[in-house]
Image (tube, rainbow, N blue to C red; front, side, top):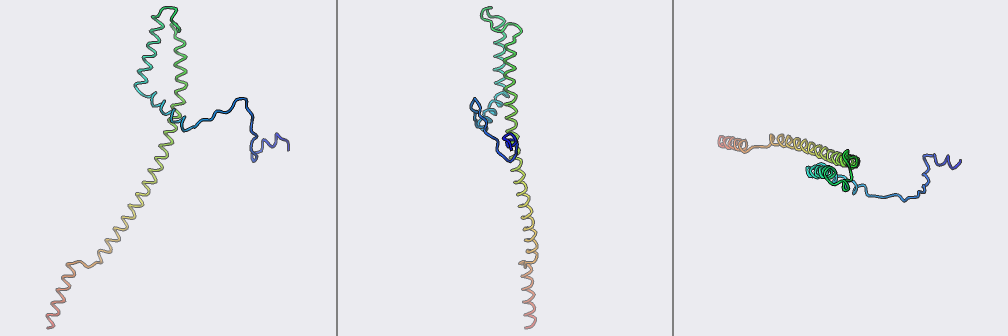
Length: 161
């Protein structure tokens, strides 16, 4: 077998490829928590106010500042680029945060379901136990029944004397 054919086999591990740049390693959980914090901030009124103030200052500066201080003239192409860049980063972060929330919801749903199944099983067990106690109590001698029986025996004994 040639080396090329061995590399294509599914039962053999792939050869380690050498790259010029080292692979970046990161903790997915830490990155997920960071993305959730960012997504949570992007959904607040504070972010909307900050973004509105930023855009307003940008526009006012580039409209009213002296010509040599303006850095983005009227069509505000650089502002559009900045907002597009912000949106292109925000969308995947929000999706990542939603996926993590979906995972947590799925786990919570499974735990709730198993807890509900245990509760149903416990309720059915208690129902059977209560039914068994009712049956057992119906066969137990009550105080009134015992008193009436004893009175009847006393009457029979008095009648024999």
